[in-house]
Length: 240
Ligand SMILES: [Ca+2]
Ligand SMILES: [Ca+2]
Figure (cartoon, rainbow, N blue to C red):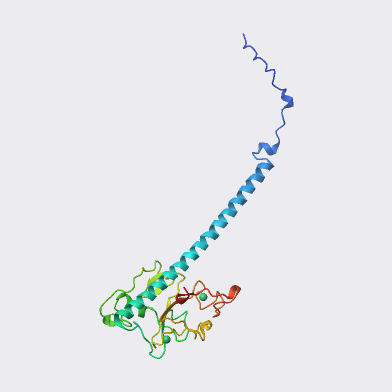
């Protein structure tokens, strides 16, 4: 004896009235679904792009903030040194102010800067054969300045390497000291904007900024307050 036939569902439609499945729907995605996916992916791409732009802005801000902090600390260290010893740690001339900094990237500056390790070895109480032989530059061995070492000595940035202090973009910090004692720093020989209005400070620190050259991004101009791409990216302690 066979199984009894299942009772027929009175509400069930005839098989013939079922929608016919197309090849597209069988492949798993309708046109509407495809559009939704494209829109979602597009939105995600925009979000990722915005995030990366924001991240690079945050990194740029962090570098500038680090530079301002370094410059303030250098000025403070030099003031403390002057208070301790009654002079500045390095003096290349008593008729001109003394400039230390990146001797390669700053080769066009006048006066030509000497490597800043001459200054920082004295301020850190580290003896060296040039600026601080047998602690002569800092006989009381006071530590006026401390800083971390760079993480990659092959491309030094943000710290000390070989006695020199580098800014976050990889150029040695420039420091100018009023060694001719006229209570001004003679910066107008390279920053033309300060001609006739020399900063009335005894110590100035500056960084060439992201373009690693004096003045404006990519232009090498001295224009500090120009417009558009002529605005300098240098960071200058006496303007903070
Ligand atoms: Ca001076
Ligand atoms: Ca610059």
